[in-house]
Image (tube, rainbow, N blue to C red; front, side, top):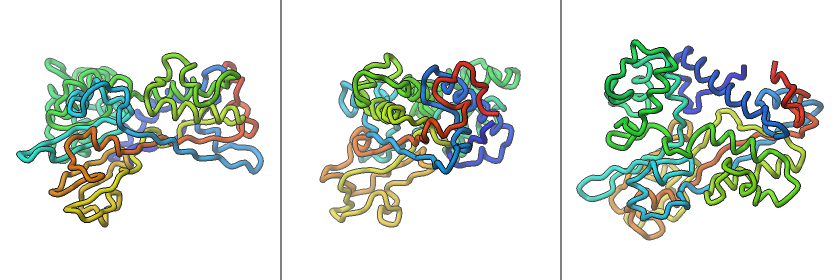
Length: 341
């Protein structure tokens, strides 16, 4: 099995049992979608076994975090996260007497925390506290009323934790934000998108392939068409591809002209931004603290959606010539392939 790494860069908090559970989850995703018939999406192991002198290519696909599908005001987008925030990025706003005080963004998928939940309540609490130091979640907050994690099997704990995420105050904004929860922001959707868009098509262009693959791709979003076009260009160029480890979506940068008290700052440079923008957890989490006098493009910061318009995120893809891949990873052998050995 591929040694999938901790997407948050935290080495699974030194818990090898959690690492095993998470890696098995990830292997399941790659096994399922690498077997999509005639798809160029394949296993990560293939890129360590390229023939000849071929080298793998690394491609970063980026997009804006702002949910362009939302027909709502910025304030409503902030408030109704589970309805509107659908670009594999979600955020929570915090306020004080002067208005907006902080915006916290996350791109972490629930599977990471499910692995901790499967091991037990205390393991999950450790994971929550690693994200939010000082958090003191109860079993009811994490799993729901009447659920006893001690008497439940691992899969039951993991499933109940995920099912309860919208009511979990450490995730739903009441006390914090933990991971992606909006219905379209799933790891399964990300894999399914890449696998579907990696089936070579003779009609259309890579840029409009998103509209040709049904429910796997949302053509009105920013993320899906960009990822889909990259996948289709790759397979039309006779390349196999996969999501690079660690799998997921990372925070890249904030665009715009930023100032504090009219003095320009590089918001993405910790040495210049006076602690206003802090990226952590392997670029899966970031916090914007609204310092007095902070503006972007000449405007005071009023909403999280305003910041989402400036926030760029990305997913990383590996690609290599199909002919250089080991035979079990090539397009056309999916139904008979045993996969990596």
